[in-house]
Amino acid sequence: MTDIARAAEAATAAMRDVFPATPLQRNDYLSDRFGADIWLKREDLTPVRSYKLRGAFNAMRKMAGGRVACASAGNHAQGVAWMCRHLGVEGVIFMPVTTPGQKVAKTRLFGGDRVEIRLTGDFFDDTLAAAKAWCADSGAQFLSPFDDADVIEGQASVAVEIAEQMGGMPDLIVLPVGGGGLSAGMLGYLRARGTVPDMRFVEPLGGASLTAALAAGHPVTLETLDNFVDGAAVARIGAKPFEILRQVPPQHVLRVPENRICITIQELLNTEGVVLEPAGALSVDALRDLGPEIAGRRVVCITTGGNFDFERLPDVKERAMRYAGLKKYFVLRMPQRPGALRDFLSILGPNDDIARFEYLKKSARNFGTVLIGIETTTPEAIPALESRMDELGFAWRDLTDDPLLGELVI
View 1 (cartoon, rainbow, N blue to C red):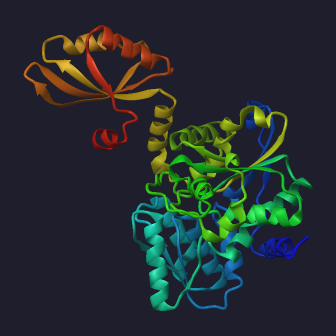
View 2 (tube, rainbow, N blue to C red):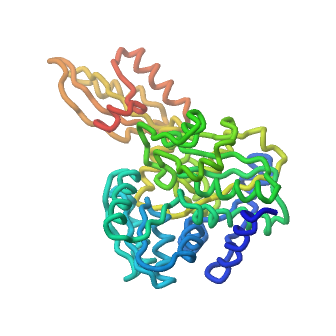
View 3 (cartoon, rainbow, N blue to C red):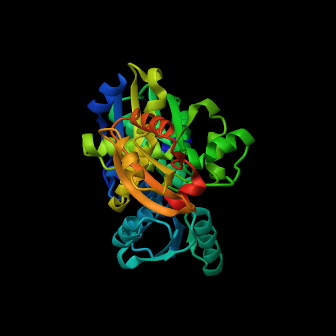
C-alpha cells in the first residue's frame, strides 16, 4: 500500500472524530428492477447532505489558520461553512446568483456568524473567478471545490469506507463527475491500494467536461453549459483531478440527459422516500444505460447529495414528463371560425388533458396562432393525436424540444 492510500485512510480515521461514516445500503427496489445487487453509498446523509464535507474537512484541518474563501454552487459551500463553524474559522463563500435558495439558506445555517455569503455570477466559473480575485486582494486562503490535493484526498474517504463496510470491493462502482474531485480521489485511492474494481463515471449531458478533456488530452472549457444539474455542471474539469483521470477509457464515461435524471429523482422519492438532488441522482440514473452489463453483479452507486429545493419539484415533474413523451407543446394554426376549437377538442384522446392554452396572435385574417400544452398517460397517445391533427388539416409545430422557442414561448 502506498503513501497515497495511507493518507486517505488517515484522513478517514480523523473524520470519525467529527462525523460518522455514511451508510452503505442495499436497495431492493433497484436490485429487483435491474437484476443486480445494487447498493447505495448514501453521501446524501452526511451532516451537510453531501460528500463535499469530506474534502472541506481534510483541507481545512491542514490549514495554518486565517480566513478561508471558496466558490460553490452549494454543496462545497455547505461543507466549508460547516467546518468554519466547527473549527471557529472565518469564511467568505461565493455562490452563483442562480444557486437554489434552499442551498443558500442551508449554507447560512451551517456557517452561522462565521461565514459571509456573496452571490455573484450566473455560472460557477464566473463565481470561481470572483472568489480567486478576492483572495488575491485580501490574502485569504482559497479552497477549491475539487482542484486541490487535500480536497481530493478527503473525497477518497468514500472509497475507504466502502472497502471497510463491504469487506472488499464490489464488482462495479458508479459515480458522478463534476469537477473531478470525488472521482479522482476514489480512483487514486483504489489504484494505490491495488484493488480497482470496474468503474463507470457519469456526467450530465449538458456538462460533460471529462468527456471533452479525454478527447482533447487535457482539460478544456465547454462552450455551452446546462446548469440544471448544478452540483455537477462544471464547464472545465480540474487540472489536478484530470491528471488522475486521464487514463480512464472514454467508453467508461456515461453522459445522461438532464430531463431523464428528473424521472429518476421522482422514482426514488415516490418509491423509496429518498430525496436526491440532480447531481445526487446521476449514478442511479446511469443504471438505465448499463442494462445487461450489470446483471447479477454487485454494484455500488454513489448518491452524492440530497440538497433538493422542493420549489424545483414542478420543474422536475415537467422535465420528466417531457422526456417520457407524456407532455408536448404545440403551436397550432387555428381557423377563426365558429366551431374550430370544438373540432380540435373532439380529436383529443380519453386520457389527453390540455395543460396550457393561449392565443399568441392572429397570423392572418382567418387564422390564429395558439400555444397548446397536452399532458397524457402513455407515450403512444401523442403520436396518435398528431396523426389526427394532420387528418383534420390542422397546421402545427412541436415546440417541446426546441431550445430557443421553448425558452421564449413555453
